[in-house]
Length: 400
Image (cartoon, rainbow, N blue to C red):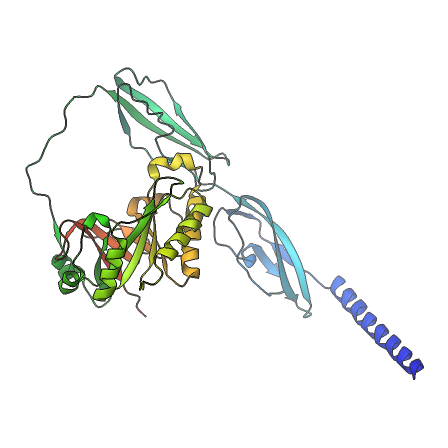
């Protein structure tokens, strides 16, 4: 009996070994005919798939996956395909991810300071890049902050890929006039909530507001009667960069009032985050604050620290990735995330994000070309239930 078992085992071993030998030789001798395209360069953050660099192939790619273009430099792209003899094979090629976008210098044709100003210009004028977190920024030309006059200068920014931006501007060093400014006896324009309803309300829109402690004590029943269809409530902020978290003094009162009145609620947080870790911590703090409350609308990441931007050593990609990290935590917890920003910064600094956008653009008709789900159209709104100004927003409902 043992003799048969031994012989049977030997036969199985020989068969298995023979199969693997056959398979090895079959793959080793398989026909591979792949012709790559002439240009294997691709721009940083471009959308590309494996097949985009292949001119021809004797078979079919199994997974025509998206290529990671978030890092600059040479990259090996590995993929699998089935050739014309139905053999599954692995192959690869190398591409070169390049950054061709010059840095951004946020500067008009003139820049005004007072005599004796301690402005360093390079630190105070926003200078950033899509890829480089610390581009070289410099002022070309001579000037004297202690001497009144006009100085023709050039702001030069160079990123790590050698892309250069040069922006000519005139520095005006002025003697303060001593005037406290002119006063106006005119009446400030107001935007009535009822007028916004009349102009913008359709079957695919909802009209609402966003509120914080600055709106004081709010009568949510009166808001309901006025036709407010949603409210986005500030949950809080931080005490500056790396500061302690501060709950908005009216948050609990506002969210309880909105929930009781049956008005759908969204949340926003004014962030001072300067890293991905801090943005994630922001999101986790928010989630703790909203436990037990009804939040059906998005949680928005509101980041507006542009005057400190140069200090953060953040590329535009790094900034956007920071926001995405915040929003990812929010969505993993079962809420919808949303990025809040003004039209100017959305167009010039923020890169594409997979999350909805809350657009701030104070105008009667926005010309922002990007996609957005909410539009904050004014900050001088008036509505019954709030004593003073309030931001008015439009929510665009998804249509099939």
